[in-house]
Length: 296
Image 1: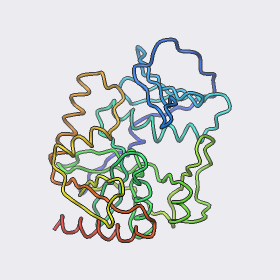
Image 2: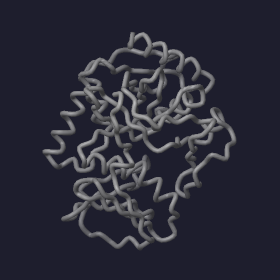
Image 3: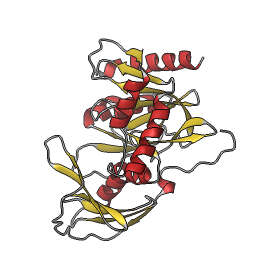
Image 4: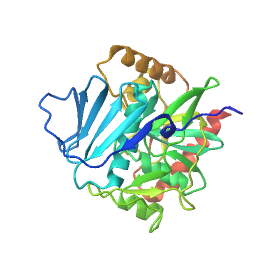
């Protein structure tokens, strides 16, 4: 990868934020919906002749160009700009990248020994907490979610994202404590966005990917790592990847082919450990040891 210049995820998309506007009623049904755990609609997806409309009810509308290279936003009345930025970086940008044929996973990533280790799993499995644990203990994080992967010189490579990590209050208290390095509070969630700095080290360089750890649900009594077969890895990669239009067959086929290529690499492992903050040093030690043994 020496001498190779790569663009970060944010550099691949042009973003334009407009003034607030009311969300007019859309009578047609959305072709796709995302819901919160309580079944409340979170994101509604609509097709337009020149773009996609992504609506976050009560928060804002985003227009994504057909090729995914441009995004425009209109916040709903009274919605502050930090909320728009949050929605763009964590929800809309990964979907826009998928329109460019990019592979973006719901995953966090850290740099260990000049290589990238990835933690992938469903919401609530501890991806961000694990990334923050590494970043406060001598490693650097590349992203806490929305991991963009590229092939560079035949090497699967992790791209750096925005330099912040979102944590619930208990994770912040356990790992960082009080800090002034925080983005403005969001009005629709108590999850804080902590900015990179002396207490939270960030890696702004693309790094070769060494291992992907799929997080278990916390049943293990101690850190436990096992090899995942390609079929199982592919299933998890599909479930935890961003794709804006799941009905477009050509894009879907290309997306699946890209994930299949990754799934067949010998880099996939299942990682489970007790969800206890005091046990995180043992988790880091186990992961670093395992990654070192794998690379050797």
